[in-house]
Image 1 (cartoon, rainbow, N blue to C red):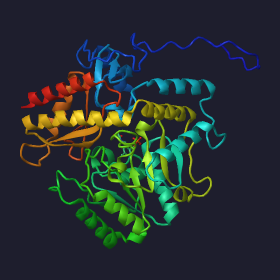
Image 2: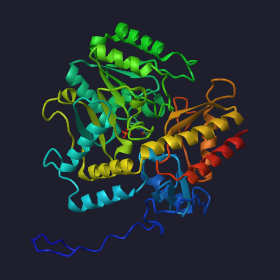
Image 3: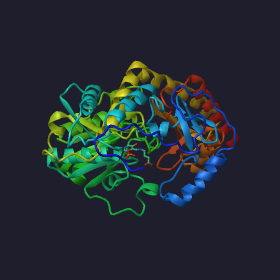
Image 4: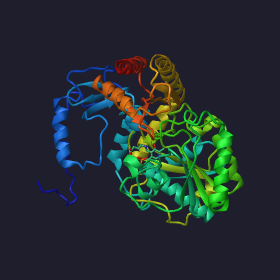
Length: 469
Ligand code: PLZ
């Protein structure tokens, strides 16, 4: 049919049929039965069929942890195209903290998408963008005047934080830390520590990036946080010159690096040094932020007030949206037109973020994150007493991990880590791995997961450890 552009009012056409792989459960959200249900082996036949198509159509560089194809998700479950219902302990890498297809997110998105989908904030702005910026200015730590700019992905937020810091200071150098992860674009790959799979074969990388030692209590014998920070600041002074450093970019708890929580005092000492030397302290809270650790931002656990914060993941309930929020004077340093992008702060993503923020506030998800963290920590600590391969249990709030080693040593055990993860997957529990040595099993459940599902997921994990022994 040829569309009618004459200006006459036409009736809407019926909707396009949904994909033939959708099951009866093509509506997700918190109303889905909150149960683990295995109808087939994992992955089931329909997922296997789709994997074959994927291999023909999708570049192999984009990898997948668990090749089950999703039909619907919500609360603490992911339902696949074979009708299996899996317990979700990954939340799409800490994204759907408010749950998949959360009610307020869906309502806000549906309302927005029916009104307009995009104008580009740089062409014709809309209030949703302002409301997200106002909310972030309010929710981030520090009582100082703040401003925000919106982007699409975490990496893009980090890139822009570096741009802002360089414009504000007139300096070039950027300090990052061992085990850090900041994204996959060229500049953020330079900031990211780990070679495989992120950096290998993709260089050369952006210059003027300097990597410093990180406080990693399990691997540095529990060294004093302030001592390591002093080593860092000496290196900065001797090797770069503090007055050449635009920004120090750090995750308050390292995410991809393996949920490394620095020793107390490490972050505050870096903050003091940054402040004394006019260095912009950038907290990359892309994984730790937005209620994940039981506070809006993980910096708050140590009373650290960053100059700039990068935010993404949990911000918009699953829609792509990221932000840089920080001191108004720094945020206003780039010239008019110096920041932007076609899609940054897309209206649908902004609506989703406002829905997610309301959900976190109304459902008390900060407290819930702390509760979930306690449950996970307690269960994992007990498991560690029975399985000597668990060398460390750590994290903050609903961001908890175990590091696996050869018993009694610090020698990483990536094979056992992979075996445990695969055993969980086969039993219908989605867990993720992480770490410089690929030997960390991390748990990042949606904050709305019901207690019984988390307990069941942890029991499956415990059995996977038992099978190792
Ligand atoms: N900073 C702290 O955790 C994204 C990466 C998954 P993007 N982490 C998940 C992968 O293998 O690509 C992340 C992060 C921190 C930045 C990023 C980058 O965020 O939205 O993936 O660009």
